[in-house]
Image (tube, rainbow, N blue to C red; front, side, top):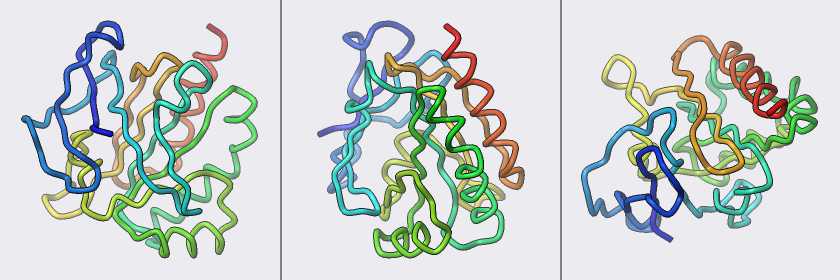
Length: 183
């Protein structure tokens, strides 16, 4: 499945802008996803070896999609471990949490197991999902840390970007998820 997102409007108005997740062949210019845009759809493997698609959650769940630099680094581990601390709050508010880094499925398996992470981790080994979402690099070299909150209709409602403020990502995401749950 190709990755798609669109400017503000309906899901039917989306423009195809990106690439096949297997080859990461860019078919069009990548643009940063912004609040109000329809989130880019993707299908890829989880740390548990299952296929997951963003479209699977459409109409059912709010999605917290967070990009982080690396499994087991100090800040990334702090962020990943902050999500389980608030995980039940996310679930009760009708959300699913998905973490994305360029680490392998095997690295994610060890990371999730070692820290008892109850949420989905995606292996973006070629960086194509990160590129498609327009996640910037910090200091020109570090993969960025960006959290997107996507509503049940697939529209991005909140973006938080801060390379070294992992706990704030969780708090900001939970606040937006709660706002969306209240209608």
